[in-house]
Image (cartoon, rainbow, N blue to C red):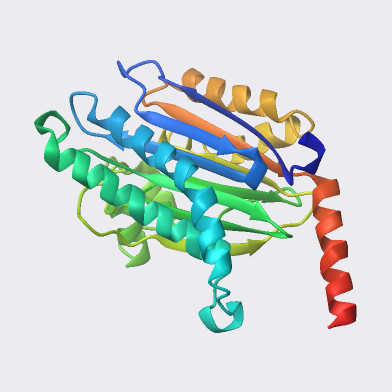
Length: 275
Ligand SMILES: [Mn+2]
């Protein structure tokens, strides 16, 4: 079974040095090439509950939703999205409703919410869906690229030209998210598809990493540990702690399984020949 997996994946989460609880949650389902990371917020354990609800509901609901969307036989060229992307978008929206309902039923969870970043690898591509400021990065040819665009006050100010990214680095209002799951009864989810190349590495992280460790250092750690993604994860966490560990910190590293990828490329090549 293991050699059929399209990706190799490793994840770690740590409370950090300041916070009393870890409100981040991570999860994965290798059998469908899926990784999920969420960073919760809200008092009385609300943050922990919200992020766990988000991760668990995506893990539980996606296999069935993939099957359902596949059977709809939607024309990708018309919709602009693969059925996989649609299924992911649907389950993230459902996670929003689940958290929103839980928050409105129980007074101790009132106002809880969570960021989420979900990625799934299939064929020779990936879909990433996100809400909030948890991120996905791609390392390709020694260059690190942030694939997701934060839903934060700071990013909005950068987008409108009030700040340069360099000035933003120094800003104190890094953690004000403008979108989160569970706050309102509907949510706008950003969904992107990307082509995956065999030597790429991908990183999902919470702001406990991206606020504490700069992109250059993240790149260096991932390159130094490129043959061993488990040590890359623990080095990233350690670096965040060494820099102060002000927040919960979570990382997931994903590398395409080269055999899985080339096999799928071969299949699509054959399809091209016969169609
Ligand atoms: Mn955080």
